[in-house]
Length: 553
Image (cartoon, rainbow, N blue to C red; front, side):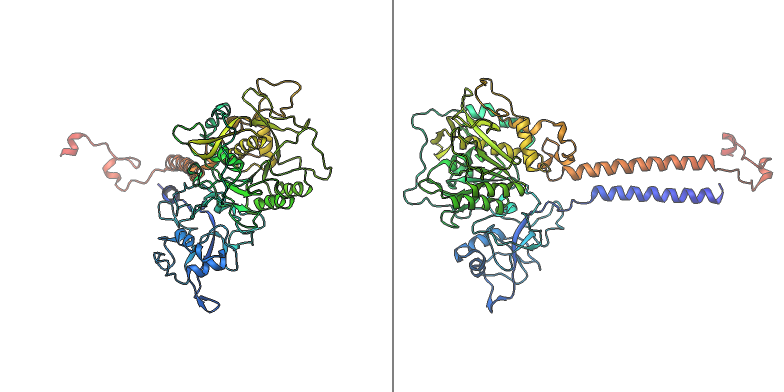
């Protein structure tokens, strides 16, 4: 072999070794923690205004009360801090430590983004704990997009008191359970009505759960609040906001309708119960617009929708106490849709007065009608004003206790079912816009068997499984690889595994090509080498073949 082929062989061999090493490194490398949640946090300083830092002072400065120092402690206890320390004593914090704060922390120094030091946390190591890990609440994947007009790592915006951001609300924490207001007892619903699971059976949401369960979705329910003491809602309801009181808790409910709506969306399974939420892995943000008696003030309704937008809700469900014929409410809904939020509202009743200035957007809004077990509508809705229908007559949901469930009728419960389906779709297809989600809900609905020509069902009854699993041709340019149904959108490592597998295949193919190239080099460039011992062979081109006998001799 001449010098040139030898050089080619050596270079090709080195490339083969390098590619092999690169393949091994890529496959063995730990995943980057690019799915770390964005949180609100504060970096402890030496002192503030000449006073040493402490948890009670930080709680007072950012949360308005020393009583909430325990929340900060619970969110950070035991988590490794810069310098190797950890928070173990509520009375001892050190400068440079990063403290995760509750969702409603506001003030100078509060930051928003991935907790410093968490960006490079490899898979399999102890990542910084977030609020969800400090409680018994199940951990959920959180969307990585910051709320509007806010970039990760920047100063957290001033939000209304009690408003969570989307990332924190996806992993809610309620360190102190709410206490019922004096005389506030949610009603039972309709007396003498037998509990029925007809709505659960008709929608059969479990057929969609292999693909999506609503993880990472924040559903704002604008109604009477939500009973945060319900065990069936633990870990899936934030503290919320009471806009009537101007910043109180929203996880208290005197009227019961908001709790019933929340149960339809996120109620957790319970042995012997017919009720389970349509999107059990989603999170409800209760926004209270009425306390012990309706109606809700117009200004409170507008503030409630604006609060949901500021909180980063992905879905807003408007209950029966919100009037979409109000000009201010219509404008707030328009703002919500402009922020890529799906708004679900009750369809207008036939004969209701119409304010021509109160115009809801054509896209991003779902107007809902309610039906009963036989397909009958709950009310006469305005002609052409219904997009889809859902169960809303004699439906079962959460009441004061498991032994005393809620059974009731109303379009607001159909709104809750549709909001639950929207949460499923948004978790399965996170790249779809609000208007595209609405179109998917419409396209996968079906007419009820008892439909009549004189009844307006819009596109028909919602179908959660079809909404999640159906492939729509019009979405092929919008839906990406991460939006295929089947749970990929809710998994944490599926995309990386697929990428690594593709890289491994490419590198394997490159190795095969190199091997073929080596064979070509060896065959095509091999040249006869001059025999240094011609006297032994009698020729200049080959060596003699030795017999077994000659080898042994």
